[in-house]
Amino acid sequence: MQLLQIDIAFIIEKIVLISVILMGSLGVAMYATWGERKVAAVMQDRRGPNRAGPMGLLQPLADGLKLFFKEEIIPDRSTRFLFILGPCLAMLTACMTSAVIPWGPDVTIAGRTVSLQVADINIGILFIFGVVSLGVYGVMLGGWASNNKFSLLSSIRAASQAISYELALGISLIALLMMTGSLSMRDIVGQQHGFWDNGYFTWNFFKQPLGFLIFLVCTFAELNRAPFDLPEAESELNMGYHQEYSSMKLGFYLFAEYINMFISSAVMATLFFGGYNFPFMDQVAASVNPVLFTVICVFVLLFKIVCFILFFMFVRWTLPRFRYDQLMRLGWKSLIPLAMVNMVITGIVILWVIK
Amino acid sequence: MKLTNRSVQVDRSPMTFGEKIYLPAIAKGMAITIGHIFKKKATVSYPEEKRPFSPVFRGLHILNRDEQGRERCTACGLCALACPAEAITMEAAERKPGEEHLYREEKYAAKYEINMLRCIFCGYCEEACPKDAIYLTETLMPTNYTRESFIYKKEDLLIPKKQETK
Image (cartoon, rainbow over all chains, first blue to last red; front, top):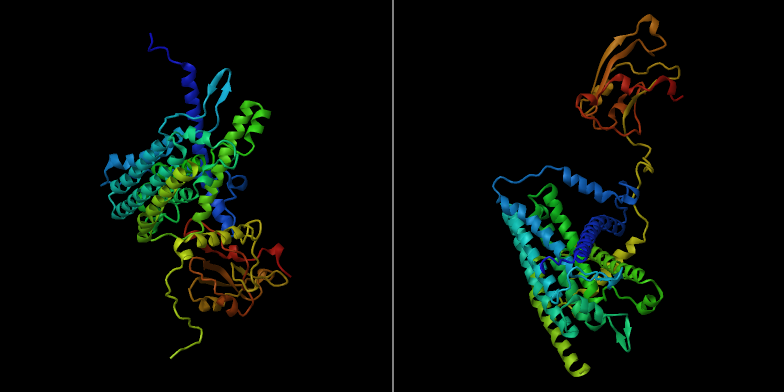
């Protein structure tokens, strides 16, 4: 009978949390497409979509319905299984990363302590890193299974770009790990409590500015977002690895890109900008209802995520695209040495200055 | 031999540190883009606002009437001759004794058709007409589904009698 002592409340709580996070990330990705068009428009002296609903807010719904109603075309000579698997993998890895991000502090409801993190594994950062690496598969399979030379070239470029920038990403994370001493996301956020802690800022951005810069640049490259958007817009004459896709499979690829953007912003906010911590949070915690405090913390995290997403969009519509060899040179010859220098400096500072 | 004195020697000096790390250029670019957010938008919210046309704008054709409401067109065929796209066709008819209030002269156009798909809106027909019968107005051409519906007949082109301009 030991096996049947399942804690029903625990299961229900996790299911509810997963559903809320999944729906939330889908919703944010939908409205990120709206936001992208509006932000692009205001930066280009025009208005964005403003006909579908007030201020164009129903535009993502219209786009989703349009994609649903289109005809699903699967090319005759394509590898059917891989063709369908590609977008599924992209979407799967995009959604899986949201499991280890702490969305708020623990909240006590009816005597139970509910943690707002789906899975508090003690290798949190490594899990995210691994899943992001898996995301490359979705792109590669899409390009290969399309049986189209241009798609193949584009997906090869996407894959090479992704793996080149993962190295610098990992090395900058090593420097961060040296400072925090733990891979678990919960501990990292816990160490960034408040904003000012007797002498220095607590957020990791102020302790690792160079590491943040490298992480930011590598995130742009991992998301295939301008100025590193060779895979999607290079073969802009042809659409790159999602050229042969139509209807919902294409929708999955496009959506997976926006969900990835949301999750990467969440990871950056958690690792470097303190997650759900904000200045004067102790005073706020003492003076309001605990559940309300948790809600405030979640909103603070969402605000930081929105700021990052807006930043991604600004940079996309400002910079021209990198050429492929410039991109590779930047990844291998500039960012990896820089990340290693960052790691060495961090080591020196920890050993000799902080003691 | 230099054609103008505006030529500038190409600057091949090696990149400075600021240019190599690219970040200052990114920051300047972002300042420009963010500045554009607060500028006036160039969009015209059609159909609520319309851009004004120039006085010589050439839109849809219209067959004019004179002050007494009689059709001016006499089916002389000069517009059809002048049309570079051969879009106008017509058939003439003789005015019967009881129709004096309808037509200005003894010859009138029984059938007058303009094929809007051929018309290039050049305005030569308007220049060629000796009776000031055909004008190009400011109306934009509406869309339609079949090719036959683009051949505008005389009834489509004529100014309605109650709304004639004096």
